[in-house]
Image (cartoon, rainbow, N blue to C red; front, top):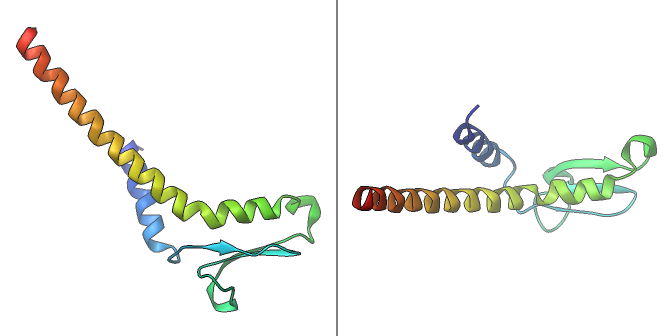
Length: 101
């Protein structure tokens, strides 16, 4: 899979996911939800502490999940900006090579 394919898949997954921003609650259960106030009809996911052997890090996981859409969007924008900059620099390099050999 090419980098362009991967970036396109990330964009499509973000577009298909529940619109954000997302947030999360802390407590005996971390709920990731899609608006400022948690409600049962806008949950993205729930992470429970009761299965402590498997979910000992549930609050940190909820933090990561809740911020993923925002962080992924930032990363996409940064990648695209760097790709544009790289294309510009390649153009300058090609022009310099043609001019000075």
